[in-house]
Image (tube, rainbow, N blue to C red; front, side):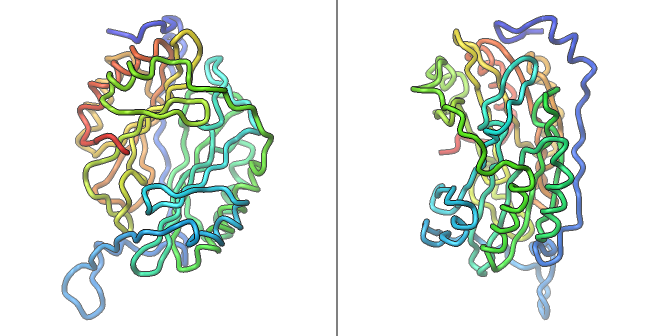
Length: 332
């Protein structure tokens, strides 16, 4: 079995007892926040299904109220998505001796406006085990559904959970207030400002790009390579913008000397899952959890979170055969 260069052979013994963790899909979706699956339901007085609703372009001005509720954080992506992140600068999260950058232990959420006037909120929240129940209650109190609760990395200190959220409605300000309540329940805002690494990542980024066939980019101390599903994804009757809720994200955190910790996940349809997991394990990549992030997407998607430590380019080369088994392409 091949392993990325620089891996600790004793670590595999320590991790063999860790199985794949199945994420619990929680529902039903909260009333007033998310309705039924519109794509599969017949409209009153018609014989056929409702046509999925498409997103519409927006600008920063369209999200002024959301920005005010969330403390001014956020920015536009691809002219369709208002994205906002709260990084867990207040925590020092360690897994297998690696202190994780806040970018990979953050709260990343997106808002999208649709042609029927509704706004979609979708994303995830990284919370400690002690915070999880308070955050869950805050979400439920504001009509925001939890669609998955699971792990993104192996054994951590403090214990962390990732909670995926989904809601839509005609008042984006109300969605933002609900999200802010959950963030505040976790004590994540405003957080303490941790110094960001100066300059680019200490990695052979050209080698990583060549191995994966994508142009990555630095992001808050990590090197990130992103891939989107080539299918059109419809979630609860809404066509998702490219990459939203359907992204393969491979994050390389520099450890010095060209080495990195990989914190990543693959987005897959059901038929790809067995082959991708088999290829990852044969390439020396550790599996963390297998789950869904949503409840009503079509085609149905599954995500496997993965972990490795070693030479960054060797890890990228080990990932490529599994990546080639998925119907994904580089996400600009």
